[in-house]
Length: 430
Ligand code: LLP
Image 1 (cartoon, rainbow, N blue to C red):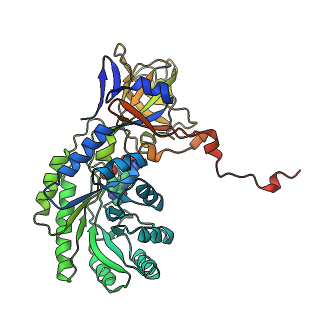
Image 2: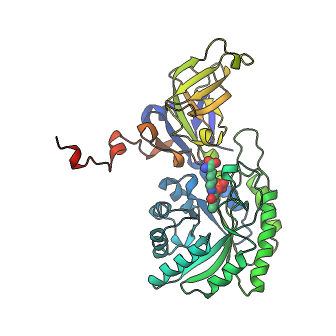
Image 3: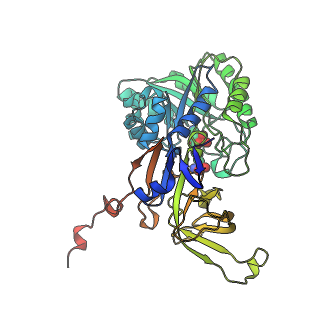
């Protein structure tokens, strides 16, 4: 359930009509609902209520500091993958003792930054990284808490680009080789083994890959115990999918129940790294129709489905990359419901690339120039994957709370676009 509903034919975000926000901030913009964010965070978190656990929101999914603050107030921590995400999490007031740091390519500078911040745990992805973390911690005269991300070779049955737990993926340490790496870590000064971690992929729509992974992790924990290594944290990553179209992902409660059953007795704290399931359907992107146009009246390619139709909107692939990158489906609905007429069309942006589309051959409103459209399920990996391609300023982000709305990131200006650029003196000489 989300709080984007029609009232008298006009889409509202909680109590605020979307056209009023468009009037105030211009288009395009991302729009998030506080009530939906809270509801989704709690739905996931409550599914593990009877277990010692920590919900570390995956910052990469939606990294605005206002939204991170909202989760911090609900007791959430953060799963970060860069120094920039650490900076954001701390700026948002997330307790460093609730931050876990994943990723295969942490630099020395990032590692030092995280050690100095006192994060809960590094999820290490290689033996070389272990050596660097141990060195950095020793130099800083402290100890870094670590876990290893193990790669269980489980097929998450999702898009190939967002599958991470297969043997052929770059992530983690092969589970069969991990005991030796743990034994090596035990001997090193500067690190303290506190956990085991795993993340097999994103937008999973079945529980079975999670359950298979947990079975493997349990065996792995037993193996470590046999080597005399006990851990305080088991981090099972994120990955629970959401409904974009026809998918029927398990509800958080069903996911929680399946995970708890697979875990059985667990004498450590469970760490979760959910991203999409919390923010995906708590955000939309609002765009305005600029023009409509059609392909040739008769083209052999289109003869079976009539004339190709295009709706050109003011948002492009630089604003929402998922359709271009993954062929992802996002429902597109009218902000003001007219006669309800729909058509099969491509919704395309202003970018000079054929791959610049928000929808392709999709059933969308028969919208006219000037009308507003809402691109749904845009809260996760929407703004965070936006770029300045074609020198387009990144759009505004707005957060609704009941009857109020707040711009939580202002639209970039042209000055923002060239900030940091310089013309060297030799180019000024005649
Ligand atoms: N933990 C780790 C280590 C991750 O790499 C990810 C996502 C998550 C947690 C959160 O996964 P979630 O709960 O959101 O599925 N850009 C893609 C998704 C990439 C996901 C990358 N890792 C998309 O737009 O679909």
